[in-house]
Image (cartoon, rainbow, N blue to C red; front, side, top):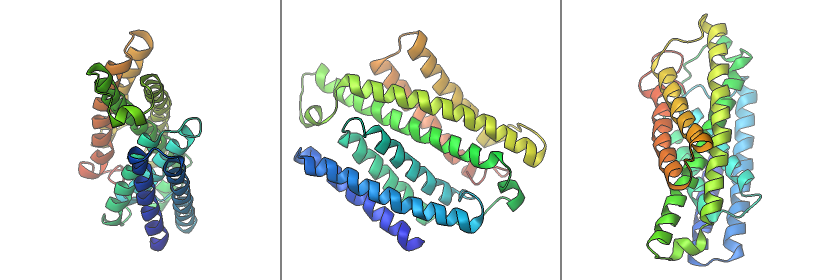
Length: 270
């Protein structure tokens, strides 16, 4: 299993190199090759996750190491689905690099489990994990779209049409990517919180306990809800929406790590 994860790690790194190569020489080989290598790495990663799930009898997310590994895979899958309609090598390079770093960090984190087996076999547990990590992945991609929007807009505004301008998608495409990721991610995050509450009620007899992870998740959900509300009803598009999505990303990262750093209860694994 460790060997397969190492293969995945190097596949993600190679994909990063190929997609970055597109910025030096905008040839189809680099863009297409990077996506293919990233796809192969994602398949190898999926094999590891399925094997671990079969061995453990539940999703491998009982500690931060396993959670980061699953998040890295889901982020890659979200990008691969998004790039199936339009080539996005700049976003892809960022995603593959992020996935590589998440995997690398996971290699050195503790592997001990923190939940009892009966807690992991409750029906709502896998739904809570998949919705939550899926939501995080879409929101990460949305934030990357917002970041590249700001970079592209800056070049247009200052009439400095350099390398990034020629390689990145248009402002309209980046704005649509950010909005799509925000909308889907917010829905999944909402479902993750609701299914988590149902899991908690079955596992410990109460829906909500206001521990650190739950509180941070609620704050993150509220922050992204404000951004989405502003976009839909108050005309927050383009630059404003992109800036707010980056602030939401900071809250998302803090929320994801909050369970490990601050919780001593049900969320010190994720």
